[in-house]
Structure formats: C-alpha cells, structure tokens
Length: 127
Image 1: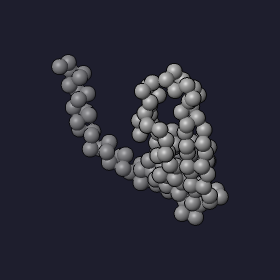
Image 2: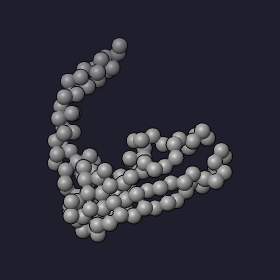
Image 3: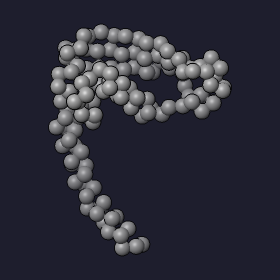
C-alpha cells in the first residue's frame, strides 16, 4: 500500500465517527426548516396519470400514476408511486431510491420555496 493510500485510509477511519455525528447534527438542524412552505399550500390530493413514451419492447409506452396528498395543517406531503408497473424487460427500470429521489426533486422544485435546503432534515415532512 502506498503512503497516500495508507494515510487516506487512516483519515477515513479516524473521521468515520465524526462524519456520522456531523450528518446527524445537520439533519436535526434542518428538520422542519421548510420555512412554513407546506403550510402555505392548500391541503388536497391530486392523482395524475401519464405515460412514458413508446419504446422498443413497450410500444404503447408505460403508464405512470402519481398520487400526491398535501396536509397543510400537519405540514406534510405524501407522494405515492406504488400503483405503477414493475420493471420492464426492455430495460426501463427504476430502483426504489431513484423513484424516491425523483419524487423529492418534484417537491423541492415544484412545490416548496427554493430556499429550502435539499437534505434529509428538510425532507422529513415528505413521505
């Protein structure tokens, strides 16, 4: 092992606990720091149906359903993507984490003010 590799590994090993503590502090700091953005919205629920464009292997496209519920009083937003087709043999697939990230991007970019930090603390009100 080279000197730089050894030193970098030692730094990571020494810092691992500190990094975890820092992450927990940042999450606590930003929890609920959406600036009241959700409370400014109207409560309600919308179900949107759309489709991915036709693609080899799925000539009719892939139907997509998004169910968004906003509870302004509780300060929560729920995005339900469960009622959608499974992964497709043609390769049009999303992991669960990719789907969650896409929903969070939609919330941050389309619903919340742009001053809201995009991190786990601020996203605690989203499901």
